[in-house]
Image (tube, rainbow, N blue to C red; front, side):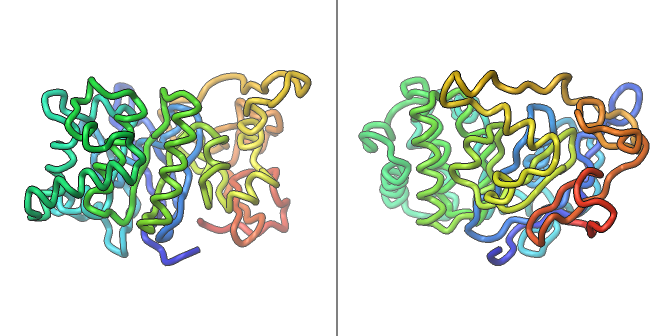
Length: 329
């Protein structure tokens, strides 16, 4: 892996709810290197976006209990004041949110909104506008000059997503968090957005944390993967290792749910049940009640991470046996 840019160490996030504490994220640890695309994969409700919002210090409601470390270039973001975080957001860490229409102001042109971010760095207005047009060209926006003068409602979903990518790149952040960047886009536009992400990684050497529920996207762009379930990272490693030798039952089931090329390959695999709401910390694997391989031990004990290889770990009793080396990520 390249030089480490971001590291999460034993991150836990609990929300105060009626009846106790809701465990949204539990003991999550991983790192992202400079210039790499790191994908966080899992079903809706498994904690992916919560992790992203915690990095940006944007957890909603003010009732979250957070423990662990979020280290960016060696500095713990959890110790930063709101003023310090305002200086980091956009300049050092950018984030593309799920719905670009909700993130854009409907009464200003899209180019004006991107220009506003650039002006924060005390750039002359004309130079800032020239950068906007150049950014629109970089994200392959058709007719960049004209689209920069368009309002959000005048653009398609794919174009609005391009605007958000341009906005987040406008201040050259070292880390870009893309939260479901292709949600609600058709497959053609989805492929174009993925191509843009790959190009930006090469051109700007930006590290990208890609959050998605789609394993197909991961195969296209990611260097490494973390698979999340019910707030925990259950498997992580190099993209080729994960796809060639998935170890955790949840990872295998997710891959079996990928669309097939032909009908002859059979029906899509489904996973019975849904992601549970964890209201109290009990021993046991969080996937046990849906796992086809679960044993009594899975309900009674919490598995540690077994190292399949130096770059591939899995949180499951079925992996590695007693000789497996257990360690933290």
